[in-house]
Image (cartoon, rainbow, N blue to C red; front, side):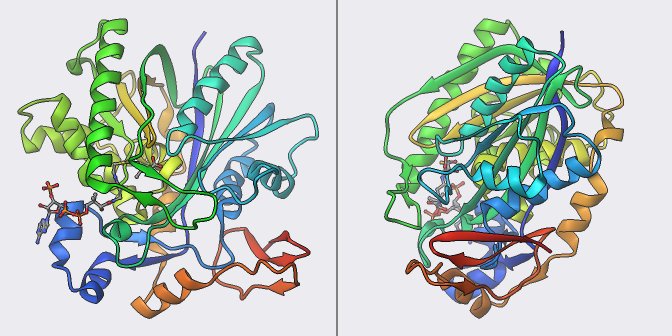
Length: 384
Ligand code: HMG
């Protein structure tokens, strides 16, 4: 029985900061960000957008199509949790009006948790092939103003369903995975910005990739030539390029562009979406591949700091193009509003009130849902 990704939907905020604007304000050569880091824009969530509204907006498209019928479990992957007890998935369950007969839980291991959610979902579907699992990965990447990480911020969510006989990607059983207790990137509960040992994090990312790939290759007997394309966790697009160069020593720039270029297009515009980033890459690839990918094998590498890496793969299914939201994804990115540097800093500094009072947040552009305010320490959401 084939099990894998049936449909996939991506959403990011309606606002962005151009990295050339950031470079000018920080006195940095723009080429460092655009070429050296490989990013053009970063998605910035306004005060009334958070991981819940980003997630619900991504999943809403699936719901509109009836793709959530049969969903018995919602796995919510994030490292931008909004509550120590209640899963962000519960708010999404409410906003989407999912059935009461539903398991809901939040998973955390930096950017890796959406990948373990995918694996857990496959196990649930294997036990009950008529059921589906909704996986949502949603995050806001936030570093200190003026820090080296600032240009690698971003935000976004991806919602995908795991089912038997999937429309998009049948996931192979083989996987290589690697865990190591390191401090390359972390966020203590009392911090709203990530702490990061930037250069070290890039080395650990590669170390985990090499170990995961070696194990995967041994288990599956496959080599790099067995893959038509590769999707990487994308903290910034140059990282994915460097990662692939480490696996495929001496690869030409032309071949590198061919095997990963299409997967990087959305991330270059949205920035790091942490847990969602690998799957933003997959959306970008499936939506933008010039070549017909039917029957082709895709290699995927999920990485979460701290750290866990996993290399796995899947085969693109016939008719996959009919199951994509390509137009909606492209329109979303084109229609976004550009922020001035001052607007970016104002939004960055807009803190959520913590005194238990009643607050209604100013209305910005969002998707179908907004985080409208706070009352008695409860987050208020509404349909727009
Ligand atoms: P930095 O140290 O300021 O940058 O920040 P740099 O000096 O290393 O420059 C970056 C690149 O730009 C270099 O290229 C420069 O040569 C080049 P490289 O040598 O690496 O090939 N450059 C230029 N290119 C063209 N024209 C110019 C120019 N100037 C310089 N004028 C750093 C870089 C990644 C450290 C920083 O952005 C950072 O700390 N980012 C956050 C951490 C991160 O994203 N780590 C990635 C791996 S860990 C991961 O992926 C997990 C994560 O997603 C979190 C999670 O799991 O939850 C982050």
